[in-house]
Length: 244
Image 1 (cartoon, rainbow, N blue to C red):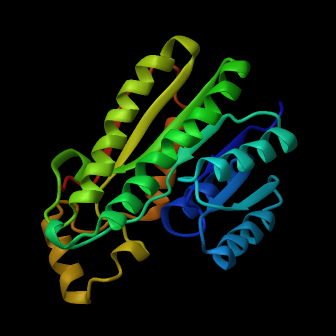
Image 2 (cartoon, rainbow, N blue to C red):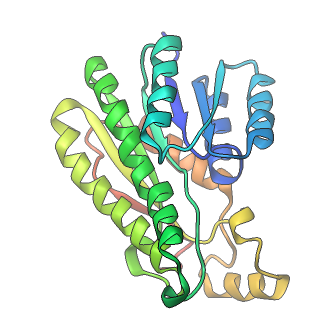
């Protein structure tokens, strides 16, 4: 069988890296992407290449910028001719009062967390339609379901991504393309390293599972969703240890 191809945005570190490595271990050709962290992106690429399981293409560029996104997809078509799985993982956060947030900071969060998913889906869907199949998995957050004080922009972007998932799933279901999302809770990645040990302990105490999640657990769920039968679509699956 021809190896399948996956694109994971925001895959230089954290959840995105774990997802990319998981797909590589499963024999997929992997396309890595991030906006700025070139050194970390290349380190992830080398790690995947050491697995000797598949090829790996890395692309440095902001998927929130449509011309840049088009350049990436041009390379994908040239090198692989197809795309089986798209994982929209690129994301940034902002913590602070809404009244203190500058318009450009709001725009950066929406551009990175939501607009990038639109760009990638717009360009991936025609390739999937040609193949007659495809999987799109959006990495969201529980804050997109319930909201978080002092994270209004982040919550809005993830709430939008959840609605985007539900609507696009209905649009693409007749074409055998499934769209789902993973709403992550507190995951032990660099994004949460601003907390000191006491704050992390207090957070873990609020989670029924008694701990933060691991990036590898997100990767396992994402891979599972990509392997599910075509009847599973339009779902926002919480992965939060029972927190929300």
